[in-house]
Length: 323
Ligand SMILES: Nc1ncnc2c1ncn2[C@@H]1O[C@H](COP(=O)(O)OP(=O)(O)O)[C@@H](O)[C@H]1O
Ligand SMILES: [Mg+2]
Image 1 (cartoon, rainbow, N blue to C red):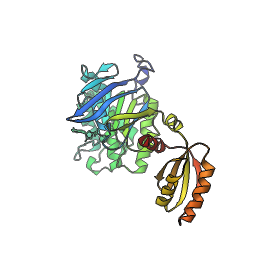
Image 2 (image 1 turned 60 degrees about the vertical axis):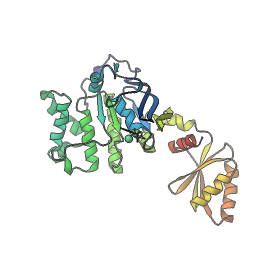
Image 3 (image 1 turned 60 degrees about the horizontal axis):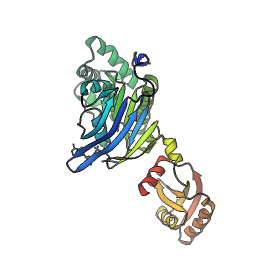
């Protein structure tokens, strides 16, 4: 199903021109630099992730891009319009799902989405077919008469997404859309995001603290303390990691981790659930396995498995933070 009849007719912007173009943007709150010379681009059909821990500056970046906050420095263009001089033109291109999306609990799903359509200036004759189409897209078509207050957390997020899409935006800003949502709904939600980018060519900038979601983006920017530390396609970031990853199973993990860190050739050791990931220097794998196994037994522990594994994005970021 196509949401935007005009999606493929838009020829004014070439495929390679970014729709979102932010250059060295900075935002301070008093002494705190919440966003520190951040540059990023998002093209049509591209899903770009803003990845980072709490307080990294993700929300502030998104709020700058949608014009909810004023820039201290830098430039933002969206669809060719300048955010400072052409704020309304920029806003008309953007759908924004805030981190804490507020819907009207005492209104039904349909009444809510109608409200968002009207506030976004969707014409009377357009809003009903448009709303029905979007509710079907997000999987809420059977719940139009349900009170929003009676929706599950995941359904509320889907209604939020529907509200953000109601004026057919070319750009979608999603602020941690799946935080606090169950795993099945997270999967559903990502299927919707991927379809929007692929079928509608929507440019999507999404913030997330989750590495598994980060790895679904075409490109990611890893942010911390207001700065972008690294940027690239997930596969390229993984390939850029120095050394290789050895997965260790056994117990007790704190002991194994301590022993591993004492080994020459182990660059770092990080817990991943019930396993350890050791990042090791090239060619040292076998030597490290043998010695660690022996030392673990001497110390009263046990290693049940060593296995070389592909680097995960977590490994990349841990290496970055320690480096
Ligand atoms: N309106 C504000 N006034 C003062 N400080 C703020 C405001 N908004 C955010 N901050 C601070 O800016 C930093 C970045 O916050 P935020 O952009 O919300 O990060 P994230 O979304 O990555 O968790 C944090 O230290 C936060 O406390
Ligand atoms: Mg945030």
